[in-house]
Amino acid sequence: MPRSLYGRAFLILLLPVISLLLVVSVVSAQRLFEGVTRQMTTSAAREVRLLLDSPDPAPLAQTLSIEVSPVVAQDIPPGNLRRWFDITGIVLIDELQARLPRLESIDLSDGQIVQLYLRKDDEYVHMIMDRRRFSASNPHQLFVNMLFFSVLMTIIAYLYLRNQLRPITRLARAAEAFGRGRSVPYRPSGANEVRAAGSAFLDMRARIDRQIEQRTLMLSGVSHDLRTPLTRLKLSLAMLDDERDREPMLRDVRDMERLLDAFLDFARGAAEGEAEQVDPGALVQRIVEDCARANIPATLYEMVGSGTMPLRAIAIRRAVDNLIGNAVRYGTRAEVSMVLTERALRIRVEDDGPGIPEDRREEALRPFARLEPSRNQDKGPGVGLGLSITTDIARAHGGTLRLSQSERLGGLCADLVIAR
Image 1 (tube, rainbow, N blue to C red):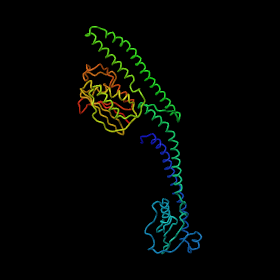
Image 2 (cartoon, helix red, strand yellow):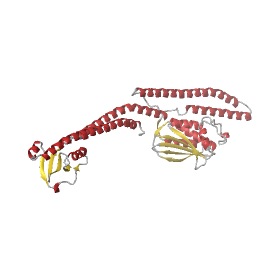
Image 3 (cartoon, one colour):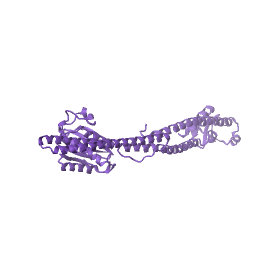
Image 4 (cartoon, rainbow, N blue to C red):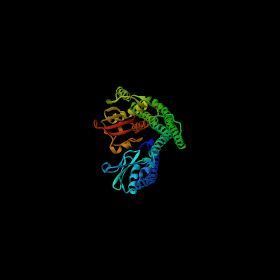
């Protein structure tokens, strides 16, 4: 079966047409080729027998428009002659052989005439008759007309079918773009069922957009409301005289602020900015350079391919920063590589840390997942949102996040893969 909807619909359209052609062809062959040819051949055979039984066949042959001439045995073809595509010739030969016992050979090599070689007493007779007296003239016209009009109606039906399937294709493109984080203009059109599906898609897209916006606003509001008391708490702690009590509490306050920032990043996800043409290589290079300025041990290992593709630069930067932060938190260094092909973009971050066991990698991608003991939780105040944020950003771009074991460094290998 074809994989595309166009191919399957066109096959559904062609099957009845082909079946109809086969049925009509079989019926026409039986009625026109066999029935009519047998009737006409029977009449012509009677005329031939009449000439053979006549003592003076010349006047009768002139009346019947039949050429009669004597022939020697050496000039008689050894067998019946027929063109390979002469379908009515098969019926004609069988019928004449059954009705003319004195028939020696039949020559149908010329499509306009029928040449008969017959035995009359001790002599041989050569008769030439018009082919139209044995079978219907131009029997192929029926098949030519059927074929021509079948092709014509198939083309017309295909054009109508394409117009009916075009709204489904537009709906599929809009849904695919929305899955990649882009909102393309779409207006329901086509049949009622397609319009209903398009309207349902627009309602779903609007609800998802409202849900993301409400989640972002809610967590932003919570973060804003919590920052005010935290700021007052920091000022109060800064005024304490005992430095031994002040520093641990200030560190706890800073950790709380980082946790709030993590919650806010998780709420925003990939919702910031619109997708635009971005050079992934230049973006990854800037991220690594910024890490070097911030004294983060991240280096650029490999860059393959060049070009641009539609991305949300802010979201991709946040995803790569999370992967690098996760790598340097549990390892001593991070190596970043980028491969851009005609089919996909792959951004890889590897570390030399303990890695994640294979049976727990799916769990590590869930929100608030804190793995123990594969990850040392004393390394930082994370709440298990880094990989989840990166996964959401990858899915918003129509991609995925894959975790594996780094063959070079021995730690975790995180691949951010986005289809082009």
